[in-house]
Image 1 (cartoon, rainbow, N blue to C red):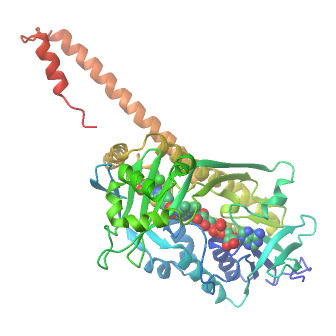
Image 2: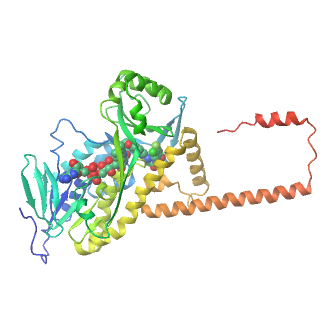
Image 3: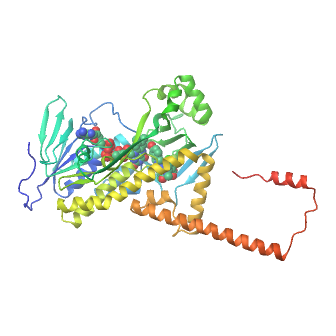
Length: 473
Ligand code: FAD
Ligand code: EGU
């Protein structure tokens, strides 16, 4: 089948765009291209998830924030999606002893949303279907494509092969992108992929007496250095708990009793909320899932093909930004399409030029946060850091902006976020140095001006008084 328009000079907008991958980013992208008047063919390897009974996939719910919302807004979907999301205004930090401490994300309007992934995907499919110029092709798995002719080869459910041509191929086929394979064969294409030693597992926390088992307005976090659990609320009043821990540790937890023993040690307060029996069941329902981080450049091939979403920049989930960044990709490409009159030979290189630095920056930030959480973040450290960040932000609101605020609540380009973060780190350190210098100078002056007399208490008593001064941390 040849969907492409051979007449390259044709000004009528009848060019055919093939979106490979009908996941979150693919479907949103299809709407963007359809809005511009292109004929859009979406190819998805799975069956239509709206008809399928069991939806296997990654995390049940995810966090939607400003970047993702802005991208949904452009196709008129923001209000519908957020109406089915649960706002989270603060984090709730669960300490080892069960104490819970809330820390707000920011001011009143600054909240993030817990969104049901399957429902979001369904809504995006249905939105795509409302455009007469979008055609959804399910059970089409891309095998390969030719960089010379641009022809794509798909396998159908029955194993039959199908060749398809289009004017532009948009690779939205996720972290293990089949479209990206052809990029790897090109000279000067950079690629790196890293699996982290942690895996993740999902556990459902049911409602208690028909109500949420914990406060729903929060992103619940149990920071335990190597181990970490987070929980997001769902509309059906359940919580979805995600446990992150090294595969090595997962291997040690082999029986139901060991699960309970492990939870008693690290997530004591969650046992009665999940229920011991349900916990044992959920823990072994699926093996722990791996997490991969992918960086590459460029994001385009000639005027034929472009990578977006996880296919271009898969990241570890420790910033809640994967989907948000993928949605923002659609917005960025769209802006460039406006600027360069939809001329693919100019638009694609410009997209790479603009987006690669940002894609790499957020992949790096997510990995940095993973390393930081793993190495030193227990609940006290988490609380302390957030207090310091928020304090500095309050006294210098324009100069010091917490990193997560720039990432989560603004559309500041990710690479600019990193630059500002390095800069403000310097400002803070110089500020501290200055304060230290002033106090040393001031202290020395006072010592010289008013030499102290020896304390008239015995030395042993001085020592015990010093010991009585407890550190708050
Ligand atoms: P995908 O969602 O992977 O979709 C790719 C699609 O392509 C799939 O439908 C697949 O079937 C199809 N496909 C694959 N290969 C082929 C082929 N050969 N031919 C045809 N079709 C193909 N992000 C957030 O923003 N917030 C969060 O809170 C968050 N939490 C997360 C938690 C976890 C545990 C994980 C693992 C990720 C999380 N993410 C989060 C990241 C988010 O899931 C991804 O960034 C997002 O799903 C990427 O969307 P995508 O459309 O690019 O890829
Ligand atoms: C991890 C897995 C708290 C969904 C990073 C915060 C996440 C999410 C944080 C997952 C954390 C970590 C931030 C948001 C969000 C925090 C953030 C992490 C959603 C720095 C379903 N992270 N996540 N940071 O600030 O900016 O609350 O799987 F525990 S939302 Cl790891 Cl804002």
